Length: 147
Image (cartoon, rainbow, N blue to C red):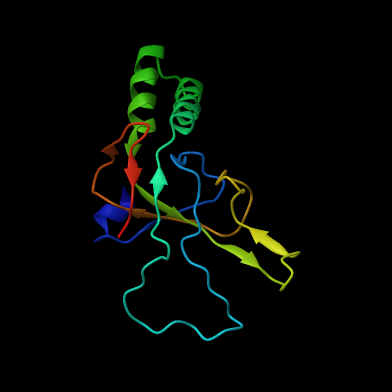
């Protein structure tokens, strides 16, 4: 990944990029209201702590997306299955994207990704914070709890 080669900078992806597939349902990472004072600088910890449960259904769906794309690009079936399986079970990092609520009632909302994290047309990028230089193999039922 480019971010791993740039000294830990996060990777930025187009919100329609289907090479980024989620392994867990999205969670609210941070909630900032620009109508209120910003929190002081320093270490920030989510409250409650975040817990990402790796989903078998998402891994299976991701494997199909990767397999179909590899086959469309001309990969042989055996190669496509092996690569798609490895990619679907490889955790690269944590994806972050903005959701802007522009009025107090929440009627005017700008969604840079869909409600389940699915890609959609948006000018806002998704930031992928890499957790390791190479994807880490995970299985359904695994849990990620960032600190």
